[in-house]
Image (cartoon, rainbow, N blue to C red; front, side, top):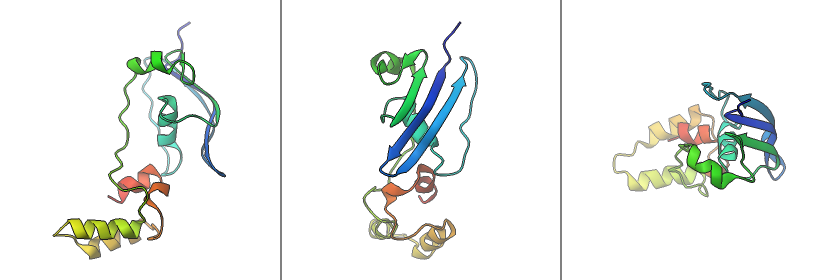
Length: 141
């Protein structure tokens, strides 16, 4: 029997008191096409980072192409490809500070349009960029 392309067992990642991903168990057969679908903040990026070893799980295990992500990463990485979300925003800045940064660097900055977009996305101006989900960071660019 062929090992699955990807298998997770009770995989989870916790940051302090908050779970970014919890109790994730699934299997994808070799040759399958799969998609991760869910709302912003659901843990899709966290799951991908866990299964390629960019971050360590708080709970559970992941196996890709028959290799344990925890114990056999060196053997696994040459066999997988991963394109991460870009994060061109400064994680330590608040949204308000990023807006100011953009205004200072861009002579054609449209502060009204930027403020309207942030309001439409319902993002608090005092939120740290690094605390936003990957989807929220991407939508706010």
